[in-house]
Length: 397
Image (cartoon, rainbow, N blue to C red; front, side, top):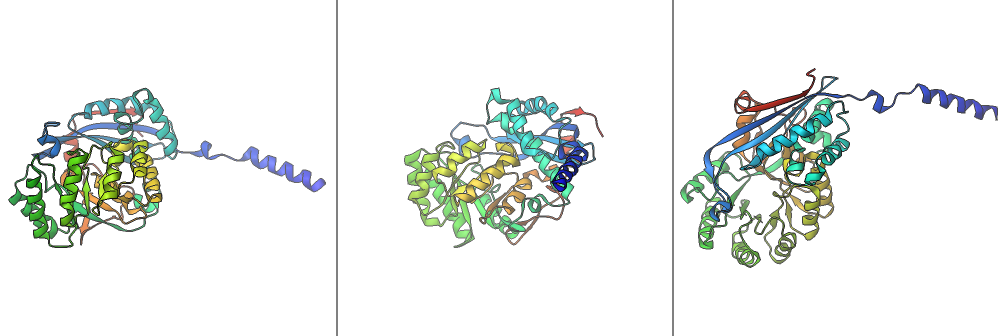
């Protein structure tokens, strides 16, 4: 009995002297937000432009978040908007930023929830979640840097490289002869797949372009098409049936992005895989899509609110055996795709190159994870020159 009493006293002393993780955690001291505009050399058009829904794309707005802590750790992340929305996202991000000052940067999931509730009256998807993304991504970048690891390695990489396809050379505004030149250049540069935009008012024009590219590439080389939500269910069925002969890797966004049931039905009906998901802006929407049965899911970390919700999408997608092909932002998505259990695809866009000091490594159809800690990029001086607005919060360490 005496020994038991002695142990109780000993445990009590240890409890009184011990420091908890909350006592010793780091703290966010400074945040810098930047609104940056990336100009495109040539206005870009897809099916949404041909139908009058949108104007040609001439620039992309980026919101960068740079975060530093009391203990000297740093992270950088970004969100973006094509056409309208950039200034609104930047404005909401400025409202959110003060909520992070003084917080432990290690508590990423808790901080995501805190920021989500800060803007909850505006909803839990769309601009409100996209404004969270720069912070969330910066915190994951910081966590990986603190560990001295590329983010892919921190997450538990399944592979050191990801097969990579190019989109930027096959837009609808590009004449067919130039498309063929772009395809040849992409293949020679080490690209592992080619994606063409389709969705012309006249399907025969799409067929002509796809047939010409398939002939140039030869049988077996991965070829995808993207309709950018152009068709209704009847026309999508007709187009998918027509494209079966070209041995496509997938047909992307044949229907409205929120027609989860319709995409699932097309995936069930045709041999060619159906891909969609880039326009969805939260985990819940992706969950509906995954459960509806599409073949490829195409989440976009900046659009869904960052890496935290993206990891949840990955977990559900892998559980349901969906293939993964993240949309845009290869600088972020390379790391996430490298950690996916089923062999994924990465979308290659050279557009973002001028924003960063570092280059990505492409070889033999695959993009390789570098040995740089975190996401592995820093903002270039050119990016700073394209930045008309910045705002800082907290005290700069």
